[in-house]
Image (cartoon, rainbow, N blue to C red):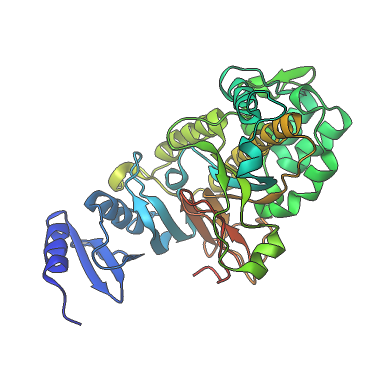
Length: 414
């Protein structure tokens, strides 16, 4: 098919940035010039704006290999991908063989999204009651206090904090049910327990408390974590939304979504814990790079299973520890909302639709198996690292920021 003049100009411009780029069937295929590395792909309609910096970052990611063994076997990006501050394009998905790339996840480990629906309409949310000020105003003031002015009380026993890092949501729940504290003493723990199946991987990875910040894992006493149940900066958010349209009514019914409902969507991650662990492994990956070999472009240092099996296992365990914290952080952000909704609007339902990560490394699964028990690591192991790109398993909801509805992806992940 003949290329348009605009596309030809774009390809020439990308060439000046050191990229070899082809475009066919609405897919860009790109690699670094004079490099024999793997080509990365991006599905984009012709004429859709692209950023050369993001393309360059994606091509560099596809070109990473470890001199002791390990390479990239597949690299692509979502259509909304864009440059990342740390040298990795946001929206990248990379499959590696025999190695992992800690920098491809970065320090915002298990940044992800959580979405609830609420059995209130927008009119009910905004209405006045008995001549009083709008309920919405009261609700907003309560949430501002919890999120910005410290009126929330995220207190837990030392045993609860340790279980959180080790086991994620199930660990936090198991200990909190026994000893509820702070803002969550009125939580419906039966509801929280029943929602675990609507969290990706059950909100639990194989963590270890040894990777957590020491001040958050005392042997006994009470932990007051100022970072937990906080939104964070950048593009993180908590939004009240409206379900404006449902495209697949059967699937929406299955997940409890109806037109006209309010929805709550949360975008946050592992906060300072992720920053702590991500920074630690940025330094360890650099220190482990074999002497005498040039640094990889963008200083994205992989860890090889053949050369550094213990470091690879330790990194995955450390990342899982931060990921567990991220799952609980989103749960508590949502639970604060749900408790305040009930305080202002009565006993409303606000069931979870789904919670899933988009900054994480997971072992490539076989036959859909979601277990993350890694077993013996080998140079043949395949790993999938996502940076700003969520998993899309069969029949699983996918949450897309910027939309007022939850999109359901019914196709298997490519």
